[in-house]
Amino acid sequence: MRMPILLPLVLSVLAAAPGCATALAGRYAPDEHHVYREIDGTRLEIHVFLPAGKPAALRPAVLFFHGGSWTRGGPQRFFPHARELANRGMVGLSAAYRLRGTQGTGVAEALDDAKAAYAWVLSHADQLGIDPARVAVAGGSAGGQLAAGIALLDPVPPVPPAALVLYNPALDMHPDDFDGLLGWAVRPRLERLFAGRFDELSPTRHVRAGAPPAALFHGTGDFIVPVEQSREFCARLAAVHTLCELFEYPDAQHGSFNFGWGRHYQDAVRETARFLAEVGLLPAIPEVR
Image (cartoon, rainbow, N blue to C red; front, side):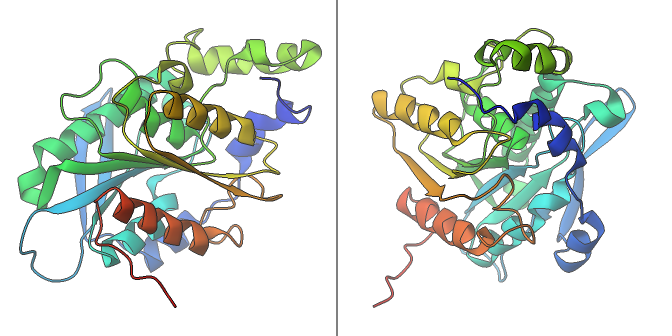
């Protein structure tokens, strides 16, 4: 797959994307905060959004990972999504992970943290009122790679995710897919982030039978992570007879599904809830007639 000519900007644009972490944290305050891991002097937190009322049974959950080129950003980015789904009956969670911009780490370390966050959720399922067999993982951009990596990249957890929800996910960033001068421009930065482990850390290349059902959201105007990445991922899931729903948004740019960034946030949340209902993680949503 060949990448658009604007993709030398891929990592710098992601890293420089405008942030509104303080506003999101204030408007969408989590109900609980927990440290799920301490590593190399860094305390990594997971933020929990609980549905209202006392549960009659263990509830499904969804764990989000933010984007930012594995370099910057924070879990606040998915606080709105987590709260919206908590309002519909799921336990919503959003986790931090180590970043190149603050800890000097790369994709492998971020994935290791994401797997640790998922394992923490399962091991604390009783405490959180969660059904461990009904935990979806979700993420945007680099966070989409982490979410898919939990389900597809070895070691796969003993209790795999029940579903994937991926927003403009970076699923295959091999520099050999970049042409000539373009490949020369992006290869050094990708080499630092992936440490040469492109095949090993690209979820698309590890799609297998038994993968969880997935919903992907992607804009056709995304010049940072092209929509072809989501199309290829869905095609590979379909080839192993796994449900994959791809929602394409004409001319939409990268990050259009983030709260406050574009006009597609509400539609994406609505379709996310519909998909999660379809795979049995939320009550069925009545049709509007």
